[in-house]
Image 1: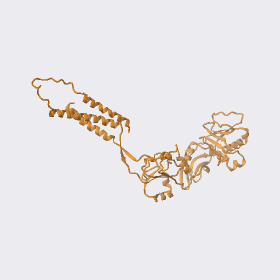
Image 2 (image 1 turned 60 degrees about the vertical axis):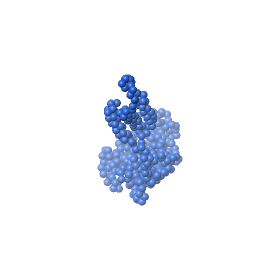
Image 3 (image 1 turned 30 degrees about the vertical axis):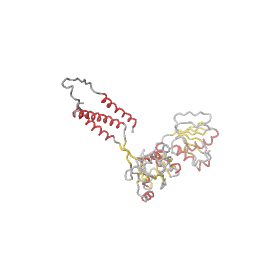
Image 4 (image 1 turned 90 degrees about the horizontal axis):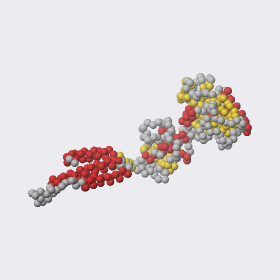
Length: 424
């Protein structure tokens, strides 16, 4: 509503004042033959005054209705709330164990946990992970005493600021049935194909590399843009990544000369075996780094601040709690080399393979890897905050503007007819 417009109702006093103050410019002349006639209030004069008052009322009513329309009034009606509503993430429809469990639930109000919260009979996209927290903000739209949300709780569905929801909303995270192992990209290397596969579970997502010949039985078709690959009876289409030359700069201090030798040796091995064409440039402590072209990857083996550039950067940042030799940092294109290198960890933790994943990674493969990400956020971190008070949405409102316009039309017609009849 716009209650401020209701102040305009005071304008209804204007036509009333005009009517009361307008006595008419009439001059009374006494004629000898009638001056002794007694003044009388005839029936006709009473009828005239009655019509004038009714016409004044119609005009005031017309103005009042227009002001009421501008105030956008709403008619409140009581609504019937469901006792219990179940919301189900669409991707759970392929989880046979969950579907069997859902069939055993009391047949209350069931909907998809998706935009608009449609009924289960409605068609929804079951392949897209919903944005959990954005949907949580819309839960007050569901008129229910209690809401139970069944969701996978995937990390990729967490976006935006953590919302506060009513305490009548209960969240249940359903565990994944199985791990996902699917291709996300491929490269042509001579007579071989380097296939990148995403292996993801509720705990970890990893990028695996597999090399197979072009004439392998699993290869259905191969073009310059796409690889159609069949594994375990499932056919997948995978984009072919371009094999352009990468320009890598390795900047190092004397204290990290050993790391420089291990990294450059791994890069040369990658280039020698045809995994990726690499142009390597080294910069010792006496050379000042300046960002320029060509540069695709910077390996920073120096103490001090790491250059903030838009290219992929691998910096030496020891971390005793890290799970792998190379791990992504908070910045988008920054990665950390988490250990000082030696023969043992270079072999056991596969330095070369870690660099392959880093160097061959691109936007297409990153987007595909995100789509396959099945990692689950811990329940304590996933569940939104609880609001201190329940939602006040207990009634529904009805827009009565069409009825006001109908009343305006009828009053206007009546006013025009009476005005024409009385010539006022």
